[in-house]
Length: 636
Figure 1 (cartoon, helix red, strand yellow):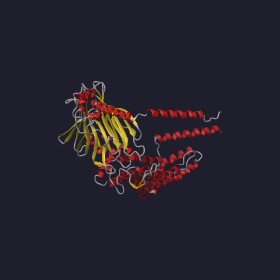
Figure 2 (figure 1 turned 180 degrees about the horizontal axis):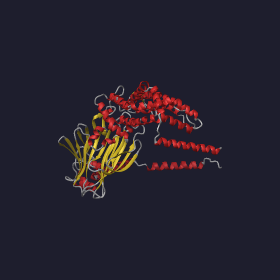
Figure 3 (figure 1 turned 180 degrees about the vertical axis):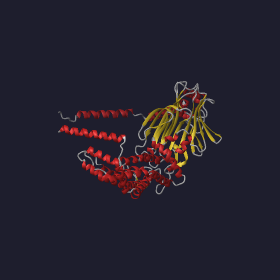
Figure 4 (figure 1 turned 90 degrees about the vertical axis):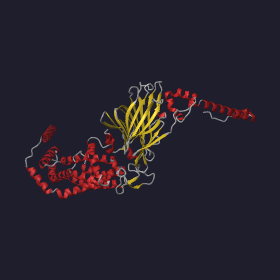
């Protein structure tokens, strides 16, 4: 390979070229007189462009600029009409940017541009840090109609100024926002506000615009909103923030709880942008929306960074014309996600609250919501939770009694069952047959303890859904917990310290609940393990699994519930304390093992008539035993 060397001739050439360029730049530098003349020419050009810009101002001015213009000359008006058509009239009407109205529950601000609600403040509530609750603020929400005109243009109401007017109709306040095409032709948003009411009667109507609209394509309503954070834990709040809708008359469904989602649905009765304890709901009052394109986007990726908004919701809804005009009666609800309030509107809006599906939701609506409402009307909320827990445990005490009675019977039968296993240790099938026969005669079965336990699952899950969604618990204090709907922090870690899955704080009620669960499981698991048969070959050792569960379940409670509602942790703590007490009472004072043994002996002495299922099981086991013996004979 040839070695590269510096070429002296190339270096000299570069120097010469550089020298020539410097000389040419020096020669082309303008003199002082030339610079002065050039500067004057540039200034004259700037002045000429400014003059030309002023002359053409009517052509380049935006709609928002025209909305503040009082007088236009004939040239500007002609240019505006050419550009905007009939909507040029709206741009020439002066007005204030916002119109503010207050009721007992609202402070509302209506935007002149677009005619929509620019600010919705709920006067009776505050956030976790005592700031006002805003449903709409700082452009987190957009409400727009897109429509085609007869001259084949596409218009958006958000780009044009509406003319506001405020009036009274009895005790109600009427806010009319009109997008005027002329003095008698307009598109109107009409808001009717009632005292002590979170539902706004909202209508979209047009007058004299049948010749302006292009009715071959529908008007599209576009409603977007970001959920504003209101709670101490945005991750916990976001878990219960969800777009919910009712369609096909009574079907209530939801978009994804945590991830992004989209759906196109038909026959929509209402749409709820639920923000855990507060909701923005759009209701179709006369006829359902024929179709709606819905999207939900999760905005919480990092709790330490994304602390302003929870989710972004969007809805695109086509609105049909009626005789060339638009006339749609709607409802806008901005208020608490409270079942008592939502139920008053007779639109099944309370179904937007996640009480649980099927039987779980039925238990909450039929039992726990009215029970807790009655108790909390007389007692402090923390005491009401304790009293309700006591009542639930007393109601389910017969279930615990059945479980312990079954365990007592199995404990008494254990020596005989062990003898059967030993006698037929080489014949597992026969051992199983004899075991079932003994249990049947004695009236004892492992399933007799499991089935009552299964009855408790719907109650436990219903309560698991009830406490996080109970609006009455919001910002109600008890002992060291300042808000029973949020976690009860007794220690906050230093800034920047956040333990994965656990959080940045220590909550006390989950710790107490975990300790109670540990001792309860220690007591019950110890008794069950003592009764358990040795594990069969190839089968897992359940006694070891149950021992692990003694420690795993409390640990799961400690971690998972650290960010949950303290009211729920309080319930589990009291519930397990009561369970321990009930178990001790039943074991020491109610169940007498000698009397149970006597009953078993009497039961064993009586001929036991098998039911159809038992007969079928016995026949199947007998056939299996015969097949096994036949296989063994063939091998010999």
